[in-house]
Image (cartoon, rainbow, N blue to C red; front, side, top):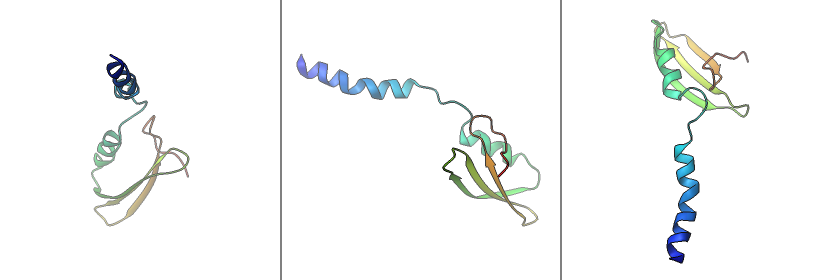
Length: 80
């Protein structure tokens, strides 16, 4: 019985984390929105900065490099 209680106690934090829904947009949704641009070619790099924003570097079909900072909660581009 004691082993069962200890096992349940150890699993409790993991199950509560799995049930939690994250705030904001998923990275895959943000990338899908960037890919909707007709000039979009490919993503080169995705980083997470210290202020809590995605930093995404991608290229256009013309070869132009684009660097954006995106708020993960809204999906909006944030000025640097």
